[in-house]
Length: 120
Image (tube, rainbow, N blue to C red; front, side, top):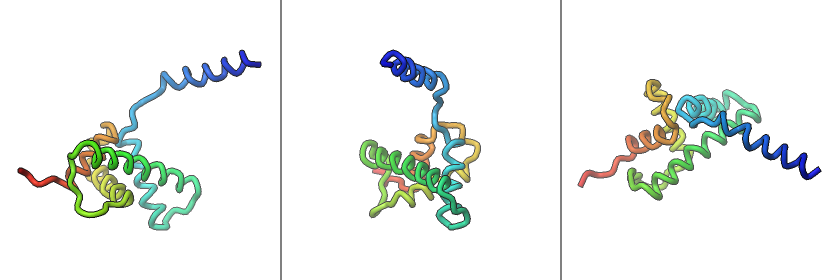
């Protein structure tokens, strides 16, 4: 029994290792688009709620890193994750030529554009 469990665990670990890829703007954009439709009430489905939540959590995590660790942005006041998602969605919608790049880089670029720091 233990041997069977070990084989199953090993198979799960190694089977996903070869198919891992970066999460890009092409992956994030449809999730943010779904979030926009779900938030506006146009779509109403539990699965879409999960997709919307994933997108919101992803951009929120990037925002937290950028604001806490990098000092690349200077937002005024309290910014919500919903605002960050709107900013990321707008950026990806306006820059389809860049969507093949890593999503965290694109969200960071959107935040830098939205919340630039004053030049010294």
